[in-house]
Length: 231
Image (cartoon, rainbow, N blue to C red; front, side, top):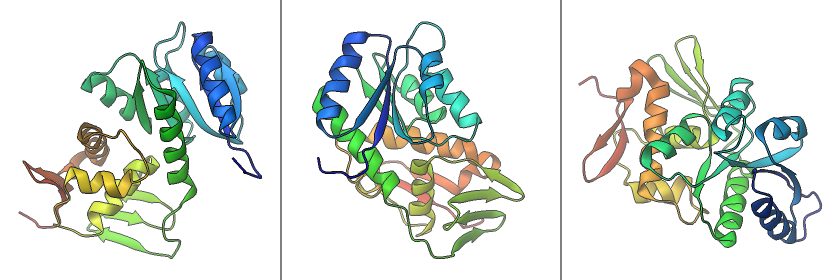
C-alpha cells in the first residue's frame, strides 16, 4: 500500500492473540497500528491523529460500548468498528446507538475486517458537496456544508453514516428507497452489509429526531422515505 500518510488505527481487545492477528494483517495493508488491551488503556493511547478504532465490546473493566459513549459525549466523531461475539439485533442496535459506524461479529475473517476498515475510512475521506446549501423542512434544517442537523434551536449530533442517510432520504422527499438502494448509496464500498444494518441505523436516526421521527417512515415491503406531507 503506497500511502504517504499512513492511517493510524487503534485496536482495543483484551485478547492478545486477536490484537496480534489484526495488528499483523492491518500493518501489512499499510496501516499504522497501536494496540490496547482495555478501554482504560485505549483512552490513554488515543491521539488526535488516530483515524479509526477497532473496539471489542466485552472486556474487563469498562466495556467497549461505554468507551464509545464517552467519546461521543465529548464530541469525538472518530470512526468506530465494534468487534463482538454478541450478534443479536438488540446488540447491534446498542452498538449503533452509542455511536458505532460498523459492527463485526466474532469469529470474523481477517479479509472481512480489512474490507470494512477500508470502507469506513473511505466514507470519511470523501466528504459531500462543499457548496453552501441547506435542506429546510419547517423547523428541521440539514446543513450540507457544516454537516449538521438542527431542529429549531437544537443541534442534533449525528454520525457520518446517520448524516448520509438523512441527506439521501431528504434529498428526494417522498421517494421510497429500498434497503438495497440505501446500502448501495451509503455503504457502497462496504461488503457484508445486511438489510438489518440499515434498519438499526434508521431506528437510531429516528430516535434522535425525537418528535420529528415521523419524517422518516417505512413502507412495508418497499423501503424508507422522507415525509414532507402534513398527513
